[in-house]
Length: 260
Image (tube, rainbow, N blue to C red; front, side, top):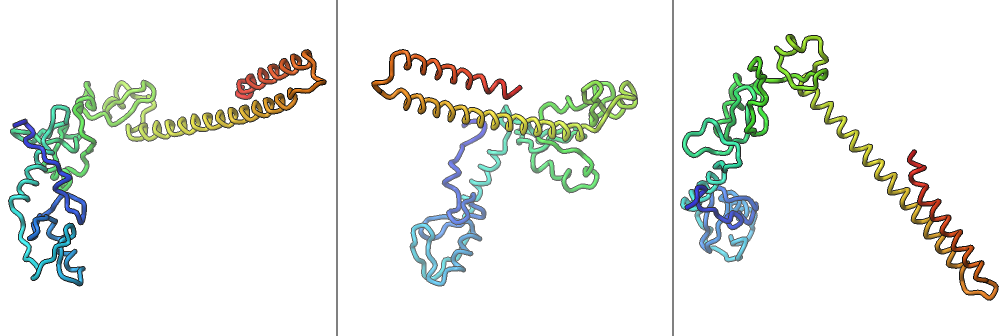
């Protein structure tokens, strides 16, 4: 058996009423399984004889629902297996033995936590000021190597993250802001840059479209002019070809000129 245990096809263990994984699963006499609340609600809404939502088999009298213990335990074990950390995952620093995947990392504790061990950070007042971020394997990179403090500030003068002690020491007098403020500002600049690029692309597409229309128009006009006629000489045809070539050359040079 692999380290992660037997993997089930979870699609087969979804309730056909709520379309989610079975919760408090019950198996009715026909053999189909549902969440207890789902099938109870389904039968409560039915005015007719209770039936199976899938096979439509009817039951008289209404079955007494009992939790399917084996199925419930199987699903619970599978949920736990899915929470175990793989080599590429950030692991919970509190778990002992086989570790679960971390769902958050704390920049104050410099530790990562699974759902269970994260709960004190969500409930206890002592942890309310702690900064929780997405799971990270490189928490130490957020710590100042000089002062062993979390780097919550950004020095715009030196373009680097610093801690509070750095701001009053070697970076004193520099242009400093909070790391959050710098992140927000850079995000805004990035969005503005993306909008400008998108606008330039749209403008260029319009210019190309107009040029294509002009080329099609001159081609159509030239074709009409060059229709066989007894009055057209070889020199006339050659002259019109030169004119058309000259126009196309002028049109193709228009885009760079407009952009200046």
